Each structure stands twice: as C-alpha cells, then as structure tokens.
Image 1 (cartoon, rainbow, N blue to C red):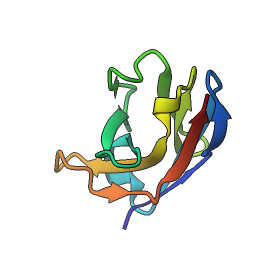
Image 2: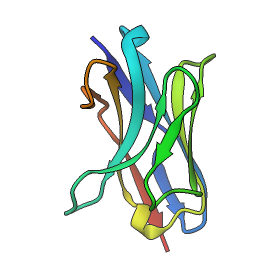
Image 3: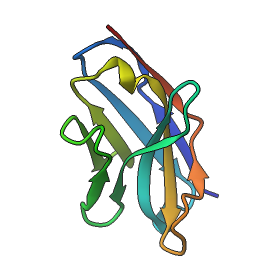
Image 4: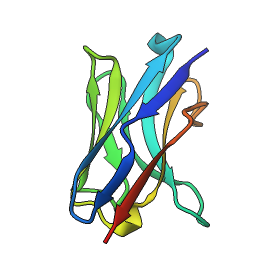
Length: 119
C-alpha cells in the first residue's frame, strides 16, 4: 500500500519561499503521477501541480505557474514543491497525492501540511 508523507510546511511572510517534500513509500514503482493539491479554509480542494514519475513532464495551475516548481529527487525518493513569491492567498493545507497509470483519479493521499503566508 502506497503511503505519502508531506513535510516542510510552516508560516512565512509575503514574498518568501518555502519548500515542501512528499516522500512516497510502499509500492512506489507503480506510481505514474504525483501531484500537489491545496485546500484553504472554506474553499474546495484545488489542483496545484503534478509531475510524472518517469520523465519530467509537469503541469501547474494558472494561479501558481511561474512561482511554484515541482521536481523529483530520485536520490532521496521525494517529490518536492518549491514555492516562491508566496502570497497570503497561498495559505492552505497542502496535500501530496499520487496515482497509477490505471486511473485518472488520485488514489493515494498524504495527511497534509499547513502553509500560512502573512502579509
């Protein structure tokens, strides 16, 4: 069973940078895509970005494009979300999620990590 553990959340100021990490374990050879989502208080969960586990193809939502970068660290077996020029509207719980090639749905989810950006 795949498990995902996020780390790296915290409280920062507007314009700061923060790096989140997602560490998959257990059957990770079957993973096709790892994505990041976020959910702000009172709002629905939204897609932030994703990356394929083979190759480097990545996608981003318009709200973070140019500020956030997703990368794989194969040596550490992590998928990282580098967030730059953070804004108060980036405040949310950030979730790592993963899916296999058998489905378009993200089947596996981490517990989430809080990111708070103050002005």
